[in-house]
Image (cartoon, protein in one colour):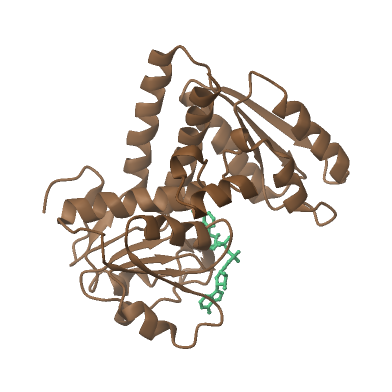
Length: 300
Ligand code: NAD
């Protein structure tokens, strides 16, 4: 095993994959590169309504953008904003040369068709990587031209860091992605396929999930069910990235966040695993910064 600044001991068999440390390294690099580039990447985040969780996400995205030396804009619109008005805002951001990345925070109010809004974002400014053109470029393997969805891009970074520190080659290994959403599961599967892994996508209709997970050298869990993946399902020596974020009530009556994987059970079985929080989550924002910088460089 080689030393990695993002892997640390857990006190048990597994190593912890420290997503917070990995994200800090990436954003520090971006900050340095932005300063050296003479560019001022511009990120606009649009929030419709006042969903508490969305407000927290949007605030932390703006803060990180400013820390990276970006021009950061937040547009707050009332929950009753008509779809056409939101699309008009997107159109004006598309035309704004100071803006290189546009992110419309999801979920949107029910009267707005999210797919229509995503399609209205210029693909060159679609830093969430949700526009059908970027999804298509990822599917055809033209990732160098695409903007790739942030959460799976961040998860891949962690998997690559862990496998290289453990001296493992991803090529030919078995990967199981649990979840088939457009924002995590499907793009994650595409990215792992491009790393020449043998990829299985499991979902809510998968017959025997434990059996599928048991063969995986790499597991990415993106479901949203607290501790659904049990330790005994996991192969000895597997690398696990837990994307799930679930709020549960602890034994002490206080709420806490847990992932989709039963973390303490997994520590005995796997080679490396991300904690929740502090694993995949921080990487999403780091990848958003990376996408915005890439979009700004391409615009130049
Ligand atoms: P989603 O609800 O869109 O998709 C969940 C997926 O899980 C579906 O594809 C479904 O088929 C699958 N699923 C449901 N029940 C299952 C079961 N019993 N067995 C196997 N598969 C099952 O969710 P999403 O948007 O992909 O997010 C998934 C989780 O990841 C959530 O907890 C979310 O909060 C979290 N998330 C985290 C980040 C981040 O860290 N930044 C970003 C996005 C999502």
